[in-house]
Amino acid sequence: MSAGDRDGRGQRVIPGEVIPADGWIETLPGVPRVQLLVVNAGDRPVQVGSHFHFAQANRALDFDRAVAHGHRLDIAAGTAVRFEPGIEQTVVLVPLAGARVVPGLTAEGGLS
Image (cartoon, rainbow, N blue to C red; front, side, top):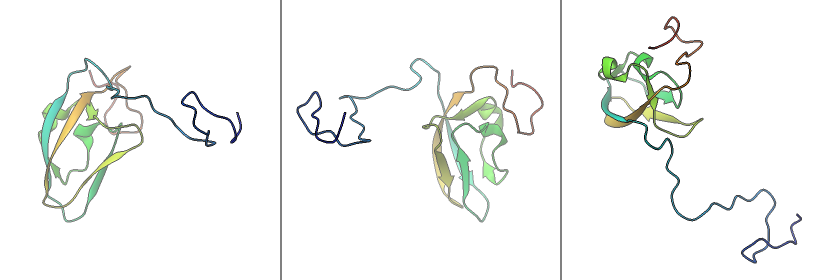
């Protein structure tokens, strides 16, 4: 395909263009979700990445860590949520899947 070609819609193709389908794509259908209120009690912003074990997030974040155990943020891979100091924020968590082992964190072994 080259820049002069036309796509299935009859429009010119732009190299590297992404043409999404109409409608919404549900990620992780059927996976249970948990809503959790989080407050950054620290004096600096904190960011938590998409696949970080949320229960082990920065200790300046105040939330129910027992509820968060074994869960990660329900956000797109490679993204993060930023928690500003003193601001309450509700997040949605999903269970960590697969072998439930998160290498490089402080927990020993799996999470089950």
